[in-house]
Amino acid sequence: MRKLNILTIGLSMMAGVVMSGSAAMAAGAGGTITERDWSFNGPFGHFDKASLQRGFQVYREVCAGCHGLDYIAFRNLSDLGYNEAEIKAIAAEYDVVDGPNEEGEMFTRAGIPADRFPNPYPNENAARAGNGGAYPPDLSLMVKARPNGANYLYSLMVGYKDAPEGTEVPDGMHYNDAYSGHMIAMPQPIYGDDITLAGDGDTSIEALSADVTTFLAWASEPEMESRKRTGIAAMLFLLVMCFVSYGSMRYVWSDVKK
Ligand code: HEC
Image 1 (cartoon, helix red, strand yellow):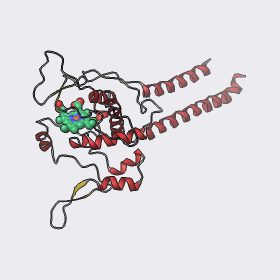
Image 2: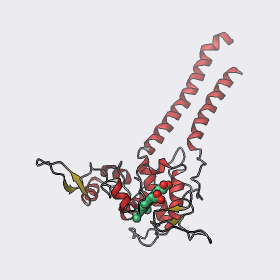
Image 3: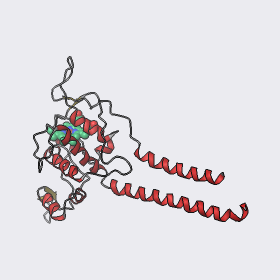
Image 4: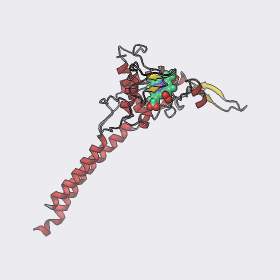
């Protein structure tokens, strides 16, 4: 009886750990949040590489005009399935401020894989000045920074609506279903057909929003896949050890019990 209890306690503890990893967070951000099934959710979650690449394209062609991605270096793009030459070419398309040189001057050069994504604005004041006083926050950690981050970000992208009858939208503000308070300074960034994807990828607002969300979920936790793999390996190890210790316990006690 006691042996069985130890075994059940062990197994249920492990089940508990596995389940707590996949439990969905509930809290929204005060607006209407659409819950979606993301490939990167759950203990076996992974990032869909094709979606990551499309999302990166959306970031580059749309979001990067206003938002930085300060914590991501070009070389991190290997996670998206790009090879070294492709990453070098992508980096070289960006101007990066470097220096000071021997004369003490800062200078601009083409990006290299070790550089991080350059911010569209030199500082916060310039960013505010360019956006009617509102500050477009860095997007590197955005999915982690907001409760229910991926669903929130997706809902924000698809949440632009006409304001309900009788609601006054101040100048420079936009009505958004997902944003808490519904008035956001960011104009609708994704309209759909304004982006041309390789092949005949889906360019609906919903599909592009899902892709950019996947990309920003990766950006906020590039090591997620290896973290989950390690977790699964640890669980398997514990499971095996559970049987080994149960077996040895029976063996050690077998003389006494006889
Ligand atoms: C024209 C500039 C501009 C573009 C382009 C733009 N944004 Fe924004 N974004 C802003 C501004 C300004 C804010 C701050 C809004 C506020 O404080 O009301 C913001 C805020 C945000 C926020 C934070 C919302 C919150 O909960 O505080 C997210 C997330 C975001 N943007 C994502 C994106 C994504 C993803 C894209 C690309 C698809 C994008 N933005 C494109 C200007 C922009």
